[in-house]
Amino acid sequence: MARDGVAALSDHELLALLLRTGHRGKGAEDLAVEVMDLAQGCLNNLASWPAESLTLVEGIGQAKATLVAAAMELGRRRQHSTTRRGERVASSREVYLRFASRLSDLQHEEFWVLLLRRSNHVLAEVCISKGGLTGTVVDPKLVFGRALAMRAAALVLVHNHPSGNPQPSDADRRLTADLCRAGSFLDLPVLDHVIVAGDAFVSFADQGWLT
Image (cartoon, rainbow, N blue to C red):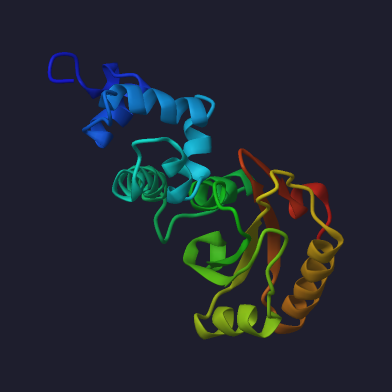
């Protein structure tokens, strides 16, 4: 790394730097190769696993596993830090890119609301609820209570599907319809509902599903 720069290192070499030491005759690089084999050579797999999953590799204890998980989280936060409050959101893809780094790897569902000023400039991002593998409970009073308290002009709904399938469930469709109706009464329009699923997403607005 000192000679050629950090970009010259392979994934397992970077991982070996984090691990620092090996175990029972195996060097840190050997351990790193085993971890990457467990992840099928995919950093996205590695980032999506809880820290304790890495302890399946002999020689990876809680301390090493936690360090690797922390590095993965820093990578996610770096991606998210490029989006700032006050920026204008002009498309469903921009909404997806705002949330992909924090939602794509989760093994549980989270429901967020993107609150917008006039002209679709971002006012705030609010996490409404966190749930399990197959769903999360969303209280419309909480959604619009936050939006009204912050004097938002409009909102975008965002949640993730840990299954990797971005298609909305019947419950997703019912919830969206209910929130759209409530928004119309309050003059707080729901502009979109974006479902994040790994590297894919679905937009209700793009599909013409908003009612």
